[in-house]
Image (cartoon, rainbow, N blue to C red; front, side, top):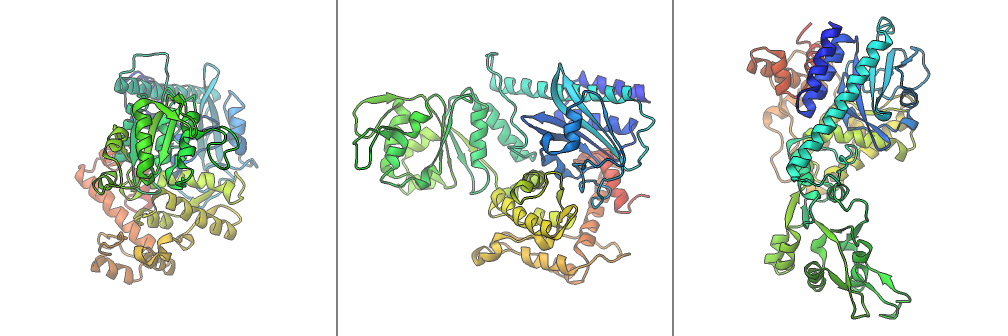
Length: 548
């Protein structure tokens, strides 16, 4: 069994499988030979360990990043090239406390745990962790077997990165081997939904060019992150990325801010000063909220783009600048062009390669990953120990998944910061955010009122009832501003006094049953359809009482 499993992993490494397939097959193989309740494969990116594949842990873990120095167990693992077995009574806090699928309320204080640092040619590439609730689960597993799995884990990470690099070079048509793009840090730019994967592909395609890029999207979607990603994947990444908030430029100083001035050019100009264009020479200039520039400044910006030269205020001498321009806006520039408020020629100069960042309500599948990332960074901001876990209850996660998010990712950050602070004040152990801790900005904005608060009130007033019969399929919807609210059937179900958790569980049962029916009761096919690994689907079905 062991030899065949290791052979299967090795054979997988010789194939050009998709990234997710490689990771998933490795995790499945580990589960076949190791008596684990949780497995995690983490890649070392910058100074963080970033989970790239997990089994038995909540999905938001995939959005987290762990700095080894802040987590004693990870610190011990990366300091050794041999597998580390933590004693069942180890006082070192487990970084996965509160994130176990089987029992998220459990603190992993007494359990079996093994950690392996993953090295390739003396370079740390990641960590493999194995956890089991049975204290003696790993006693019969020798270090050679664990070290073999660790070596295959390191090779899996290397192969995935190699395939990603090949794909990038193919899409870019880049034959210049002197330039190697750095992979985008997962913890900086999160998104695995189709629309975000398409955006990441577009970023990879255009990043290495010199084309002007216009980034559009609503407020709070992360346009600045897209600009940073473009810069860090470009040939200019070793030079400056200079950001200008065009909406904050006062009319009297805007030209000086962009192009600079010489001493005595105007009252208060006591010395020569470089503008943003000169500061960005040989680098990238990011013009945020470019739609807010005055028509006069738009004309001067157009000239710089056309001629590659600027003039400081107070002197006629031209200064050559080599700058790649990235612009962003939350406004409809074509509409502004039609209204005569934005120059059409400048629009076409900026919009050589347009990128659109989708709003959060079009990528709900990314919310668990975003929550994991936000919560892992939240602890520093609210004064919690880095070893203390902060997580969302299932009910709170469901509220976040159904909220329309008019403020996008920025609003999600603020909601979680408020909720995390409240929850931490009420807890001495694992901090679990409940629906009662969630407060949305739209509650104070009557013009953008949503159905979030009525739903929260229902959740907070409901308590789970043992033996509640399974009901018909349930649809719970929080409507966006100006759109119809829940159906009458939904209101009747909610007013029936059933708890939110019971209704969500019923809906999950219906989804799993329907998927199994659609796939002739083949669990592997149903798991693929639901984008779950087979082991996780079995655990969910067992938790919901569908199988014994």
